[in-house]
Structure formats: structure tokens, C-alpha cells
Length: 288
Image (cartoon, rainbow, N blue to C red; front, side):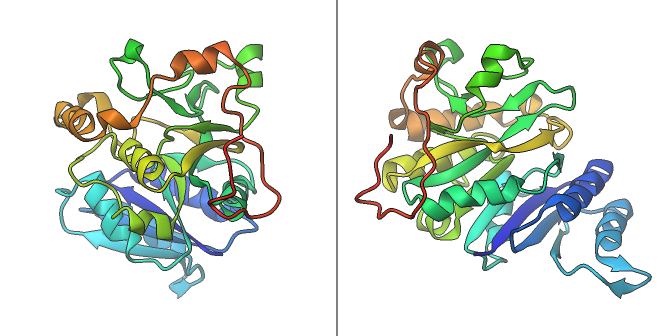
């Protein structure tokens, strides 16, 4: 089954170059195509894309399908929804343009979970900052964060306890779309990302809808490890529509999640995911 890698970028020239190079060099064992949505691209961005596809004027890499937008007015949700429609792959991998892949089987390990378990709707990766601290290993909800989604062990260095915790796959209510794999059929069944979100929490909304409407959970995959230069592709905390996005989350999704932070911290075996060997029908698969 093929994977459409969906990337949205806005003049993030240097990091986009590294991102594309790392995908093309490191992604093995999976049939994939990159759909690259470039908002209001300048000549530097166009050159990065061109050089990733052509050598001496000859097309040598047909894995990249660029889509140029004349403006940067669209939301993350609307851009990714439109971009996802360009492909036909059975799976869609949403990826930030400031991600660096570091090992050959990062995508294969994500895909294996969806290949074998119909009760999983989204798969997220272990994302680390360049200094090795954690950026993402799953999303929790807590009164301590005013019932807003937050990343487990966010910005924490990896000590012995954290290393043990993140070494096993786990169910979560949500994972980040900085690197998130979904089935195309599930994504389309939900109507894609909720476009009431402009930039922020749209991935959380999708995961919560996946859980409430399709009865499918998110799983964190520690065997898919990548580097994330968070903040380079956009500064979330300073985004002018942050409060609008929070309102959308609370108005439309507040009844779809539970406070689970303390459960993860108090029980190292909480929501541990067991890899499946064969695909199970939805009515027979159970969360273990």
C-alpha cells in the first residue's frame, strides 16, 4: 500500500531542503510520493524543489509533486485538506517541513501498525529536538494545562525513567500532525481536518473525531524517530488566531476527551500498545 507524504511550506528554504533530502535518502521499504504545497514561494524555495527533482535539466526524481499557491492566506487545515486530495495513496502522512528523518524504517514502522490493526486511526512518531530533548511522544489532557492538549515530557531531556517510558508504543487520545500517518479512507470519512481551526489543534480535533466517530485510537510509535526543528515552520504561541482555535476546540470537542495525564505518570504500563501480527476486524479488535 502506498503513502502520500503531505508537506506544506512557506519560504522555509534551508529547513525544507534538509527535510526533502532526508526523506529521499532515508525512506526505504515503502512506496511513497511527496505532495509539496508551497505557499507564495520565492525563487529560493522553487530552486530547492527544482533541485530535488532535476539533475542537469533531466527529471531524475518523480517522487515529488509540487503545488504552488499564489498566496499564504489558507489555513493549515484547508491547505492540507486540498493537498491530500491530490494523491491516491491508501495512506496519508502529514509532515512538517522542518522534520529530519534519521533512519530508514521510520515510515515502515508507522505503516505496519495501520497495516495490522483496524482499531488504530492515527500513528505518531517520536520527535526530538536537535539537542535530543523530547518534542513529542504522545498528547495528553489535564486540568493542569487548563484542559488543553499538551505533549508528554515536552522539552524534557531523556533520563532513565523517560527513556523506559518512551521505549514502548502507547495508545493516546491524540498525536501531533508534525508527523502523523492516517488511512485515506478514515481521513475522508471524517471530512478531513476541521477547517474551523486556522493553525493549531486541528490535529487534535482529527484524532478526537477519529476516536469518537470511528472508534479508532491514536498510537505513539517509538520505532519511528525523527528530529523536529519546532518553531521554524511557524511560531504557534504567537499566532494571532490562537485564542480562536482554543475556542473552537472547547466549543466543539470538549466532551470528547478525558483527563489522562496522571494516569500515564502513575502507571508505566498504562495504555501500552501491543503490536498485532495479523489484521483484525474492527468488531473483534480490542484495546489491550
